[in-house]
Structures are given as structure tokens and as C-alpha cells.
Image 1 (cartoon, rainbow, N blue to C red):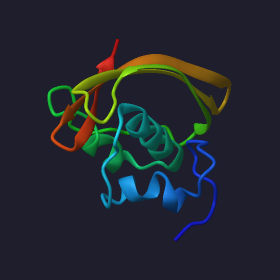
Image 2: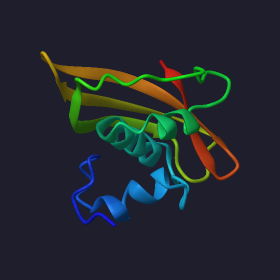
Image 3: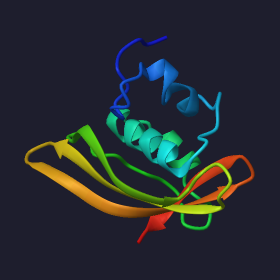
Length: 124
């Protein structure tokens, strides 16, 4: 168990935040929680979780992460829908990384819920 701070910057320890989602012990209750868990997966290099949390209709066969990038900060800019009783939602975010250069990925992502599970669909 890890008591270190979660990469998604929720302020919670990893094992109380994104860890249970990565280990398939819990479902993300909202689109924003799924977005945070996906950011943490990028930060930790967990390509398997990224593929599992990607909707089958848009998911690639494989996913190779750039080991030279370090994802270190996530800012949630806005959310539309994506709550526990919604079927879809949008989360706009900025994700900051360091590598050969520093950069930011700004995106508005669409999410869909299927049963108890939220899935990343695509970028708007």
C-alpha cells in the first residue's frame, strides 16, 4: 500500500484515491474521477488501465506511453454533466508534463457511462 500523495493532486494518498480504480477494486463514480484516474495512470505509466478505461468504440489496439515524459500536474478547468446519474459528460483539463521540453496538454474529453463504469470516449 502506498501512502504517497496521489498524482492526480486530489490531496489524498494514492491508495485512497486512484489506486483502487487502477486495481479494479472500485468504479469511478463520476467522469471527473475517471479523468483524474487516467491522469494518474499516465503519470505512473499504467497503459493497461488507460486501455481498460477507454471505450471499446474508440480504443486503440495498443498504447505506448512516452517514458521520457513526466506528467506532474492536472488542472480541471470545467465539467459538464458526468455525475453519478448521468450517461455522458465532458471534462476540460490541462495536464502538464516535463520531458526534453515542458508542455501542457489542454483538452475537453468526452466520457460515457455504461452500467457502473465510466469510459473515456474521445476529445472534443
